Length: 173
Ligand SMILES: CC(C)(COP(=O)(O)OP(=O)(O)OC[C@H]1O[C@@H](n2cnc3c(N)ncnc32)[C@H](O)[C@@H]1OP(=O)(O)O)[C@@H](O)C(=O)NCCC(=O)NCCS
Image (tube, rainbow, N blue to C red; front, side, top):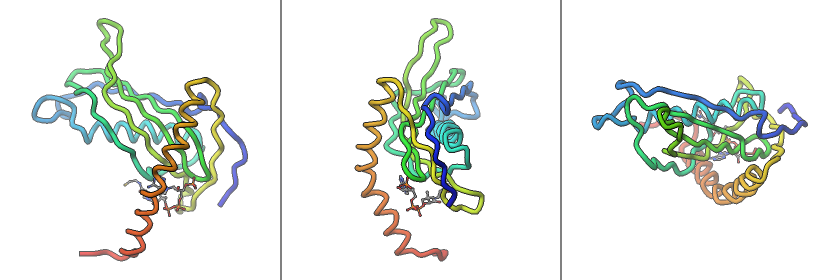
């Protein structure tokens, strides 16, 4: 495992992505399909994580995800991601999704999520990631909150290990 010793600010990896929603992205009600929104959230989160780690990252988990308000066909969707905190090989990234009302120059929050990414080499070996330097009051609060979420997630990580141990690496029918 290659050791990376530097730390990076949140601003260095902050990422944003914008999408116009097309009919091909919609469910039967004409709203953005939830799975597509999850894909967008994962993509922008991976951008921030990979920029922070300067490495390939894989999604280890996505925490509870709320669809606060529907996104409609024709909406301009804005997704913003930043690394809240880094550990040894993993990082918690917060993603916020908003719809921009271009006519009135205002934003509406539609969804948010916390995701954990792990930095890896091409062969899957984990990479040690730089720590996060929180600068603003907001970033410091998110950094502290991320620590509490990691403690709550520990049980889930353990459960995943137990499932893997029970199933092994073999294929199952
Ligand atoms: C994510 C993955 C690399 C973790 O592998 P693992 O053997 O459980 O790894 P380890 O126990 O060595 O843990 C590595 C890090 O991941 C974190 N982690 C593992 N599972 C996690 C989970 N479910 N949620 C949050 N963090 C998790 C650990 O806390 C650890 O963090 P740290 O090094 O910063 O302390 C592995 O499960 C994997 O490759 N999963 C598939 C990833 C993927 O393909 N994603 C795309 C979805 S199709």
